[in-house]
Length: 253
Image (cartoon, rainbow, N blue to C red; front, side):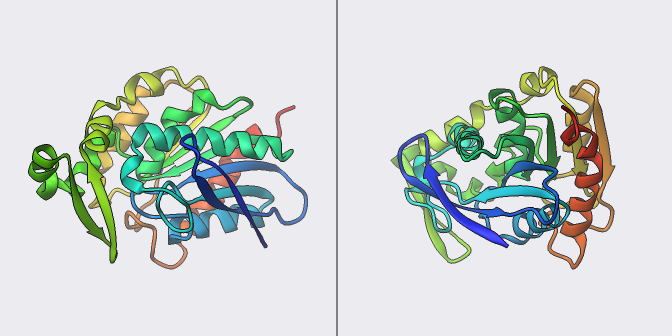
């Protein structure tokens, strides 16, 4: 079962979310951050959150600015904006009496949770899935537009049949983002998950995140998975691993 919710972005627009409600005894609550231009209903987000909920961990997944059912203009956001809205999502859950203890992010969202974690009070564990060590890795998606963005300040970009506006401020913000200091000072358990055959974000990114992090840290190879975790059973398997790994942290007093 899922509960539809909404909460304000840091810039004021209403963000749309779904809380996948835990089945049986509540083990804890978490927030999921989706990939670059994906959304709360993409296979990785939906399947991972549903599986975690089936194992007693309630999860909030939400559409970032201008995506899915959320208000606003995607191009007015940025990596910093995504990080800030992830923190707002955790605050919203806490205000609902659902203190966030687990933070999970996929791809660009994996980078965002690494940056957001230290800002979330009460957080106990962080999981990155297929995350780039440098947020600017996403530039390969729109590198053909960069000359026009720098010349005109913005350019239209069609992704999955939807027209998005890519702005100079967006590009520059993503380029400025540096995760290494955030990872080094995380000071909480980190699980790094990545497929060795990921052709979108190479496995070297996971190795760098893992090397940069301090203990307690864990690494799980999602062999056989693609970047988007679209093949049957891939996302659910990742969720079951997360559930088992996080158990000792969710059970802490």
